[in-house]
Length: 115
Length: 114
Image (cartoon, each protein chain N blue to C red):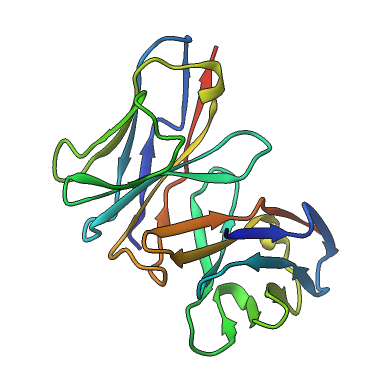
């Protein structure tokens, strides 16, 4: 069964450094998402991406964040200058379509630790 | 505003006994509701979803959930727990407010005792 994959599984970085989190969505899916879960808190929506542009973003997704689909398979989340509060689990997801009934398929997550 | 409340952060059952994981939602729009399960080091796997058809939804691994609009609930049940059911379970609401919103509950960790 096709799966969403994410690399790395765990990333440790120093405050102020740039990080790129990588995701490979399911191949025939058209919509891509990033979510994050700070330890002990709920999973929160960050951004959705379709047709090579951001379709929706939350108030969390500020100028420090960017997303890109650099080739036909990868979908990346870049954090320009990491802060301590960026430490969280980041989940990538993809779906065939974007409607309230469409199922999003999630990857296993990347745990980001900012020191 | 939309919200999802999972009423228990932890649930512990014995193997072979029923499982009940509770979820209540609040939404001004017609919601779709999902239950996902997350095993350690794995992605969130869809167990089942309610979109607007039958209110009793059957999912994988013997799980089912009933959408009760009057109670704004979507509780997840299974008649007989298995050790492999031990995991984190998330109730998720999706609504179209003019833009699409996906809102997660806080999660319920299910422990299954032998």
